[in-house]
Image 1 (tube, rainbow, N blue to C red):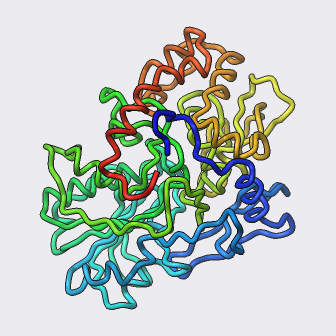
Image 2 (image 1 turned 135 degrees about the vertical axis):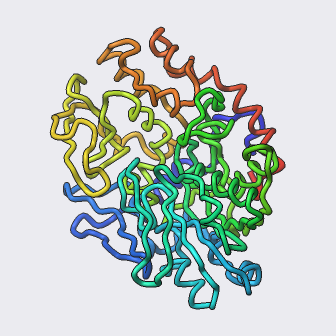
Length: 432
């Protein structure tokens, strides 16, 4: 258990890292464009001739590192009775799979009355750029209305919930506070609480659920990329967080929704869970997901974090950095206008080193950011306004400018992590 060592990763170590690399590496000679039945999910591909260290594949053989996890959506016998005879809305996207079949198909085939589908950032099919507004539309295959909950309409309007008895939530998260699927869930819970609609979470594992790290959000930095007073890496599933949001009365006016969670089976917070599909366009493999908690802060600086390349959130760079490694961001699906588009950047390639086991041990690592700041300089002008919203606090920026190192900054939030580990305990569904 984590006990009083919040930065320590639970045991799996080098054996897990070696097994993960062997089991999930994609062949260099081919691309995997396999899709599920609906709405169509593309696996990650590498066009530069280099394979990702841990790429998404759904048909990998069982290994000592793999898990027999059964996600909430896979337990139809537990939730279909809760939907019988009721008008259903879904908040889901391309990750809402039951095996290779989308939840929409699964429910329709069993006679569930789906009245409306709601979609988070990146859209129902998971193809839109980060921050790109997606219009509402009617799905051609089913005729069901798809309502976008990104852009101006982040919280469902009362009329959009008219005639709906229960909202089913099924989206794969990655366990970082600034990943906006959590915020979309919050707003839907809020709307359900205010409009008398039940809320059912089909839970999925947290691929970064084996550690807790980072500062608790300062309320003055609350935004869509951070709404809750939790650490950056909270170590919880969205089902657990839904229970916490309800229990701590974090919804508007202290409201609480009628909540039910279908937990995963055979999952603990020690499980290293490999996602079957990429959760969003710029997190194409497990390596990116493991690095995301350390590299996302570059989005609040002048640097590129690899958007517009084959390795987003696995590389970073800038024209002024001194390095033998270089790349040039270009427009591509999921990054139509990436930062530093068409500009030669020098920086670091983290696709191979350090090994996953070291990433797990280090947790959030600000050393990449601090070294880049020291090379480029610029004082406060190095940081964009969104930086404090991503970190959730102002002191990280202030300490970097003052010359502090990664370990010194990390020690500042140790108390936050220890308090949160106690606060979250009543809401956990899985063994720590």
